[in-house]
Amino acid sequence: MDTDRAAGAVAEEFLSVSVDVAQVVGGKFWDPSGGLEIVAGGSAEVEPYDFTRPQLVALTRALEPGYLRIGGTAADEIYYDLGETPAEVAPEPFSYVLTAAQWDAVDAFAREVDSRLLFTLNAGPGTRDEAGAWTDGQARALLTHSAGRGTDVAVWSLGNEPGYFGVVHGLDVPPAQWAADHATLRTAVDELTPGARLAGPASAYWPAVGEVVPFTPAFLEQLAAGGDPPLDIVTWHYYPQQSRRCPAGNRRASPVLALLPEFLDEFDVHAGTVGQLRDEHLPDAEVWLDETGNAQCGGEPDLSDRFLAGFWWLDQLGQAARSGQQVVARQNLSGADYALLHEPELRPNPDYWTTLLWRRLLGPTVLAVTVPDSAPTLRAYAHCARDEPGGVAYVLLNLDEEAEAQVGTAALGASDGTTVQAWTLTAPDPLGRDVVLNGQPLALGADGSLPPLEPATVEGPVLTLPPLSQSFVVVPGAAPGACG
Image 1: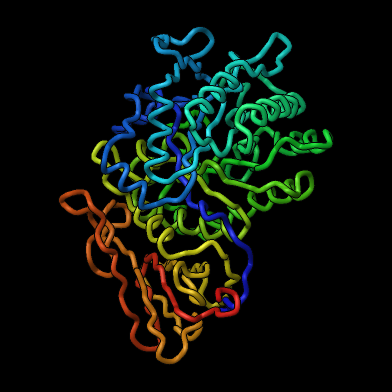
Image 2: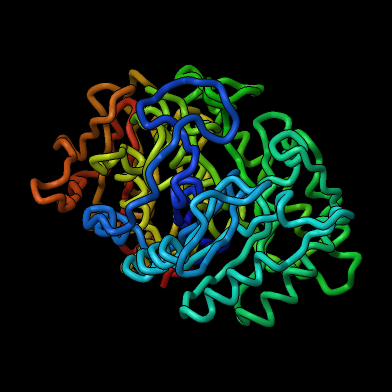
């Protein structure tokens, strides 16, 4: 494997997380009991999110620095009432109220875990005039409040998944109007929170078909035609399958898909489409995947929070970094079936452990790596190792359910006498939540603390990857040119 060549770099905040705004305000989110009521947006009322839980703070801080994205479908139904006595019921046509106390809780949490904020502003029916143009009164109220409190919102986004507005909110906003709306927001952001960046359009891409309602191409074309595009970041959303909760879907979630190379490879297709549109219209903008999860509509019960689903997560992270996505925001931090942490006890789901290992071991520099055709069930990604000058950190996935995979350490760049370290994750039941690291079960301590996550030392010239395993491998000195 040739890795002594840098293929790009991602932001230091590449690994980021989301808390849905419906959770923040105590709106409708996905049934925490795993119920399968078919509904758009959420199936159960939840209590306002408790950001103060010590274990939540500690486990999130371990993943930072990153962005904390506050968004989701309910973002376009929120009324900002930031006074001392906020309304208990949102005025029509809004559905929920965001209070100053809730905003302060988000701000305090972001500060405590060393996270930067990305907030999705309401662009729904309650913010538009009779002609359909977006009005900035509500946004200005929140921006002013934010600036007054010293809240550092690094990125503002306007609206969530505009291609769905007609179905979800009964409101069709043409791409040209959406572009004009962003220009209006740009003026307010520059005036009230100077230095903050603007991201959009947060369009949803479905598996196989891409944008069900084509929106991004015309939107970016309209922005570019304006001569001074107000957008700093092109954002998009992607779920590789849909939960049975979703009222519509073209690929229902199934464990049968989880290890298929064609299922995993599809991300690159859509990432390539978005990247090409950025190159054509806004070449100076970054591209972020600012919402993604294993299955749309809260995740698939008994699948999205299990070890088997983690092959998708690690593989998509590898592809996203390789394709130049600067930030990937996981939907979501806790709650529902696609979360990193299981509510209410905040037990780490399998994807939490791999996210943590990625954050600790992989630096932002992405390396080119190829896998020989003779190993079709082996997936490999490589970055410069974090805190190891000249070293390379690999993510190696053995998709074979029965056979080991053998990888020569020399092929990973190891010289004679090099100590190679490996963190290999397996599971007693691929459809279970229990994870084993180098033969030892992973669990929090009795006090909620993280275990040490010690590596195994690879002896000899061959690294053996167990069947159905996820491995992180660090090879010191493997790429002195690219990672020196």
